[in-house]
Each structure stands twice: as C-alpha cells, then as structure tokens.
Amino acid sequence: MKKAEIDTRLPAIKFDHVSFSYDSHAVLEDVSFSINHGDFLGIIGPNGGGKTTLLKLCLGLLRPKKGKVEIYGKEPVKMRKILGYIPQNPNPNPNFPVSVLDVVLMGRISHSKPGKRFRRDDYESAKEALSRVGMAEFLDSPIEKLSGGQRQRVFLARALATEPKILLLDEPTTGIDAPSQSMLFELLKELNSQMTIVLVTHDTIVISRYIKTVACVNQRVFLHEEGKITQQMLDATYQCPVDLIAHGVPHRVFDEHNHVKKNKEDK
Image (cartoon, rainbow, N blue to C red):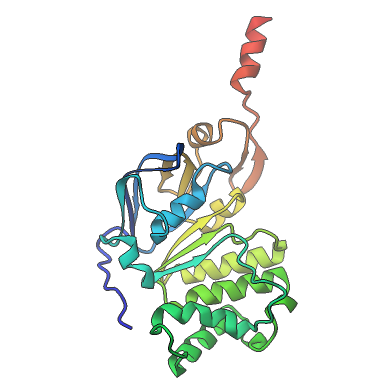
C-alpha cells in the first residue's frame, strides 16, 4: 500500500492551541509547539501531566477538544503509515504462544489489505528490522522467553517494520536493566539520522546525553530547543525538587517548596 507523502520542510509535528480533557478532567491546556523533521524530542514531566496523551494525539488515537494537531501538515489519522509507536508495557499475553517474528510482523498490518496473508516483502521487512536491533538470531524464539531488554528491542523492531518517518516511544526503558537501556538509546541515536524521534522518559540523564530538544509537560508544554533543562522549566513543570543534569553529572536540586518558605516566614 502506498505510503503517505511528506514535505520535510514542514514541521514533523505541530500542536496549535490544543486542549484535551477526559470528561471534565483537563489534561492539556492551550498547548502550542512544533518540532522539525529529524529532531529527537525528549518529553519529561510528572505522572498524570499529559505525556502519554500527547503521544496519542500525535497518533490520532485521541482528538483534541480544541485546536489541532498536524503531522507534516496533515491530520494524524491520514499519516499513521509513517508513525511507529512503542506504548508503555507492550508485552503480549505470556499465556499466548507467539514467536519474535510473529510480534514484529504485527508492525506490517497497516501495509497489508484486511484479511490478506502477509506477503514476502512483509517477512523481509520484519527480518530486516530484527537485524537492525540485533535480534535476528531470536527470530523463532518465544517472546515470553526473552529478557526485558531483548523484548524491548523486539518491540522496537515491530515499530521499525512499519518503515516510520516518526518514531514515538512511551517510557521504553521501564523494567529493563542499565546495560539494556544504554544499548537501546545508542540504537535510537543511530536511528535518529533516518527519522524523527519522540521519547517520553523519567530519566533526565538520558535527556542530556542523547536528545536535541526537551519538552516539559504538565498540562502545558515548555519547550527548550537546545536539549538542556533549565531551572525555570523544572519549576514550572514539577513545582518541587527534581534531579537535574549539569555538565553530564546528576545532582539534586534542593530549592525549598513554597509552603516551607512560608512556614519559615511565619516563625
């Protein structure tokens, strides 16, 4: 099936005064920002701040209550063929026997006609994706037998099998060990030369080492295009002390909470 055409002169992703709520609970309010083709955006922020909702709006799985989202100037639902996605906790049912190849082939469903079997090019794309993430030798292995880091590389291969121009990842390092995390991010850095990457993470160390642009999300979005986290962004987003990376070394920011300062003034 024909892929959607893209104009790389346009922003890869653009939010224009977007607001979204679940029933009466506001999650995002008047969000406006854009990222360019080839960017590597790291999204940080507190739980419930709207990070996953932001990704789902990019995918067209959710629609804004106000404003609009564009992928290369078009509605997200029209651009799904160029979007690769790794959700939180993508593990298949461990009681359902499925091979590594079966999992990666799921990424080819959008390229196939409904009800049709996978074609030879689907299998070739799936195998190529597994080779790119270093998992070709596990082609026929049951997915439930793999380690957490190996599984995550398989899910990345599934996303790559869609041949994406934009790759969206929602906390991909959750539940995997440090060496596997490093391997994953080195791979993402390499892939960034071929596609735009948007990554949700709680790991601010990763922010300073790999990404180009930072977005702090807590109902609103604070964007920093130099890939650095400023104290102002942290204050506006978390409103409490958080880990900050300076010169590649993590340290704790111990600014006092407003209520602590007030108590001291009252004494």
